[in-house]
Image (cartoon, rainbow, N blue to C red; front, side, top):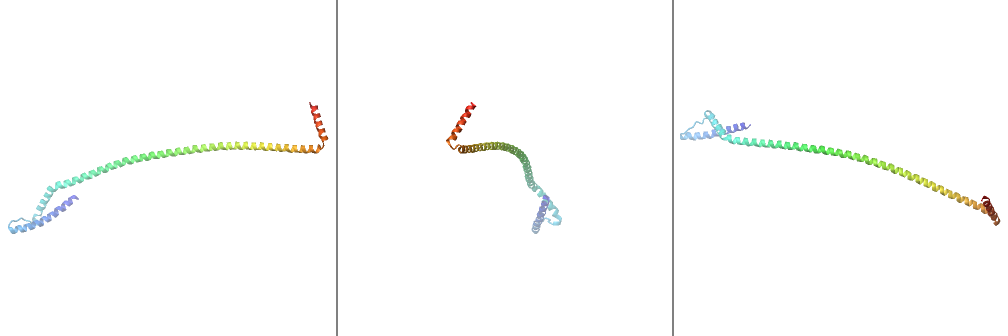
Length: 194
């Protein structure tokens, strides 16, 4: 591609030189000095001179430009390779960190499941103990209530029996004589038993 640019430049330069040379030739012919600037006869010589001049003078300039461009491209490639290597290292590092984070997350998840299971078992055991304690308390309360109810019934039965005995005694012992007879009989019974 660069060669085609040089070729175009040489051609353009040759046409300009030919045009300038033709003007010089015409002015020289008028003065008596003459060069043959016939395009058909001298075009190859002009081209060879222009090419030789370009090669001689342009070689260093073009070589420097191409060398600088090559150096810039090589530097850019090296920098890209370094960035690629750095990116690969960073990617490996981040993947390792991700793997560690995932392993830690799994460990935390397993620990949480184990803690939840232990807590659930502890809650169920405590609930079973609480139920047993409540049953025992309910049984004690029931037994206590039953004993209290029996004691109250006994007291009522005794109170009713005493009321009936008193009413019978009152009805049968209306007089003082009856009361004396009862006392005497009770004393006599006590005396016979001893």
